[in-house]
Amino acid sequence: MNQRQGYFSGQKVGNDRFELRRELGRGGMGVVWLAADLELSDSKNWLQVALKFLTPDTQSDKEAVNMMRSEVQQSRKLHHPNIVSVFDWHSNEGNAPFISMEYVDGVTLHQLRHEQEGH
Image (cartoon, rainbow, N blue to C red; front, side, top):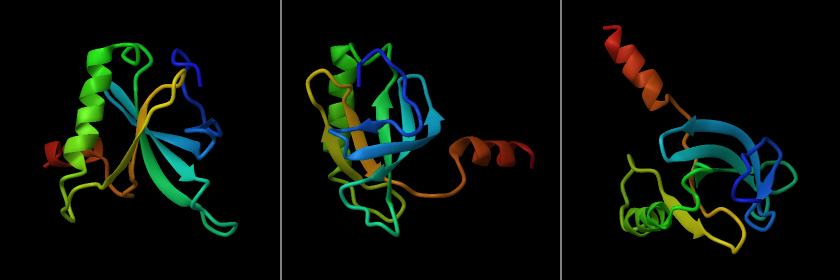
């Protein structure tokens, strides 16, 4: 994956281990995708994971990459039912680095805020 390209459904990343399914969310510095872990999935069920990438314009920013790596290091020390588990940091030369983490299906923060503002 070229660092300057965007992402698309069906794209394989991480040495073809993960297949992107759909974008889950986007922020100022990152984008999160629902993906299938092809290495750990079987023919009947695919293992869902969330992959967090830096946005294309921040992928060449060494400070942003270091902050993302630090996020993984700190997150792996946290274990609580209300905190998403971070699995790993993925970085290969020539490819955009990303984080693999637990996918939790549910209400997004945006939806939750919208619901609370309505009350």
